[in-house]
Image (cartoon, rainbow, N blue to C red):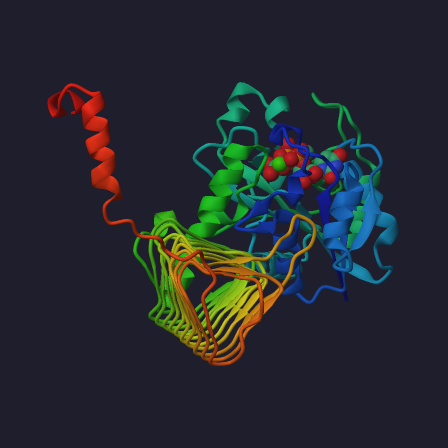
Length: 467
Ligand code: UD1
Ligand code: CA
């Protein structure tokens, strides 16, 4: 009782007009082909074969370790692609599911039903069909009087009457392996495109008296396929809505789900509110009771419970529980913002750790730094971490006060509880509880301005003309 799957992904997908292979285009952040492999992984199959061809290296790299690879050197049609996979089929394979790599939304349960139906009917093949409003470009399924599939006719080969048919071939099949092998061997390329159509196997099996059973998909959204970027956006919208509904049902508030973009590898805790214009990309894990957005982009970020992130961009970093970020903060890779920290407007962090309860409230740059707990890193203070060649670290102990517009010229270490005066350019280490001031002394000349004005008045005609 061996179960196999063959996924066709050899054609580049010219209608995408892309350098990237069609099946590698991401849908909600994950390449199409991986959506399909993840779905197949839920089915306890004995083998999964992906047929690659054009740009095979790039496809193989993405699917490495996830499937066996068959190569279709020349793309002579979907039937020909299956032929390329036959040598890899296990000898004990009795069922072979065939899918196309450009329909990423298919659900495991639907494939399972298709396989069950074939076994229940003891049919040669079960074809997943769908009734769609606009069948343009898709193969139409013609049924016989008994309701079996008579044949599938491609758009380019269809008569005007056949084009009216709205029952379409989804490109997902469950075959009895022996029948697939035999029928694929008999394919001919006598059609408008001169290709070996997999769909012709249905008529071949039929002509031999075997049954091809149509199974209509319950939810037509599942079988949406991508041939161009308009369809890519449509598929993305379907999956986005599904993901968003899942999170809303699990206790997350999305103020405007139409404008909230949550990737497939995201987790969000209950009672978190996500505002419009928020993109959660890659691996993002958000705790409970957070507020995220509006207009916020998080990529590979962990956010603790109760944190608040407003109008900010964060990448490859952690934000601790109860922290407040933004508006307009930019947290670059390698940063860890501790619990209850405040990172305010126009602050940039890069590869830096900010200890619990510290405040970096406005207009600061913190790069390659370790800032202790409860430190106040005041407005306009910056780390000078780069000398044009190398990067250097700044270390600031707990409870220190870094005044406004302080320049910390790294490498530099400031001890705990130190106090750096506003406007200082700190080039040397400051010990714990040390006080440092490093700026030119103020010179005040009380009479200077008045004298200057008086001198100027003698040179000009009068104060009216000055204005
Ligand atoms: C195909 C079906 C059509 C169905 C539609 C559903 C055929 C002949 N037609 O048409 O009935 O309604 O899908 O989306 O099967 N591929 C290869 N090697 C090839 C040709 C294609 O691997 O030589 C792969 C492609 O990379 C793609 C998939 O097969 O992933 C489908 O090919 P595509 O050209 O998109 O077929 P459609 O014209 O959409
Ligand atoms: Ca297609």
